[in-house]
Length: 310
Ligand SMILES: NC(=O)c1ccc[n+]([C@@H]2O[C@H](COP(=O)([O-])OP(=O)(O)OC[C@H]3O[C@@H](n4cnc5c(N)ncnc54)[C@H](O)[C@@H]3O)[C@@H](O)[C@H]2O)c1
Image 1 (cartoon, rainbow, N blue to C red):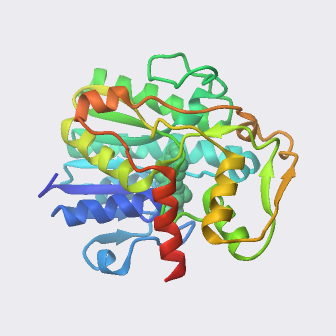
Image 2: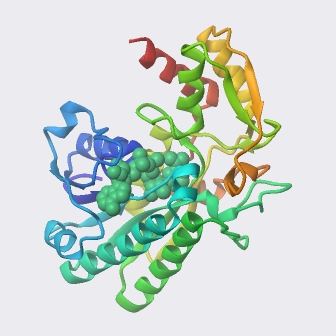
């Protein structure tokens, strides 16, 4: 993708900052809209090449104004993190639902024909039981976050039917990489291992997740954006399961840490921690763009380690 004017909501966040960097590198004009809840993760050398606005995505007038002349909107602004969402369900849903309404209104008002939306694999709930999940199975969202993401997917399908706006919902599976903060398990384990503290594992540690390297996730996102037509949903998954205990052991081993693993009960009423198994199929993605995430977990963890050492 090149020579496009692009709006990225949540572009200063973890995935958004990698997406911003890639789109700038490809020669696009990027406008980032973000409230900086977690600070600004956009690298300095990229920041000087973009237009940045500290604006709430729910501010409909501002989002419409800042989107004038854009070719495409990547909507990545969200409130996330298992504990944060569980403690702030109303704010989580408001940001999702009102944020999407702002983005949709801006697209309609300004004649923008493409929206790329960051949904989540969380909407599969407990369903990934015996096999990897594909996009066709019935979903089972159980949290305010996952429910609102599914609501927005359905809304985007209707936006295409009613207004002809093309869109894609990306169901990301546990994205990780540089600049992620310790709301998420991988940065938390690194921090604990390097500080000589116990690595805290919720439950038995036998629960699995599918860890997808951020550079692979944003490459998939941009390739999809180039081909978007109608409304489609795509898993963005590495297609490999790792147990949380294995993940903790790997991080302990590569950091040379003597920290023990400490198994603790998952906080009650934290549904996401209880999902026993989750890994996805990226077959639809690969068939569509001839690419799928391929960085192994060991390789991705090494990149993070090298950065932490610098
Ligand atoms: N990281 C993952 O594994 C993962 C998995 C599934 C889905 N996602 C989705 O991908 C997107 C990006 O996630 P991330 O991991 O980069 O999270 P992140 O928290 O690092 O980034 C989200 C960004 O949105 C911004 N934001 C929040 N509320 C806002 C508002 N009202 N107005 C403007 N900006 C606002 C935050 O300041 C932050 O910079 C989110 O939509 C998230 O739901 C992420």
